[in-house]
Image (cartoon, rainbow, N blue to C red; front, side, top):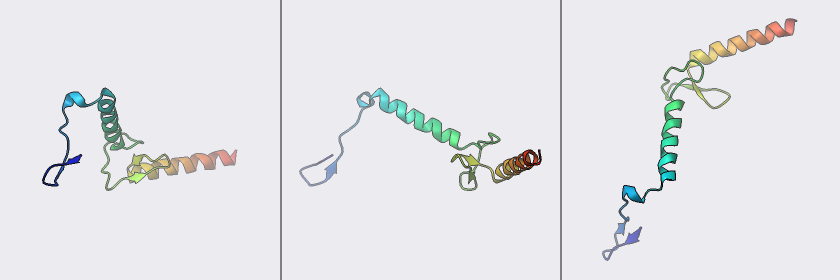
Length: 83
């Protein structure tokens, strides 16, 4: 960025040819991560980020999916403790 003669900040124009392929790939990678993060890590269905829960791995999950998974884990832990 630079100041023009009137003291206004000007940004240099950016052409597509000026963007490095690594930058394009990193943008694509970020988009892929964003698309994946909008799916429940348990059932794979889309989740509304405003309503989702976050599991122990930092992934978005439906509240019901998380509760079902937690109850299954608790039941499995209880069954192994009885052995």
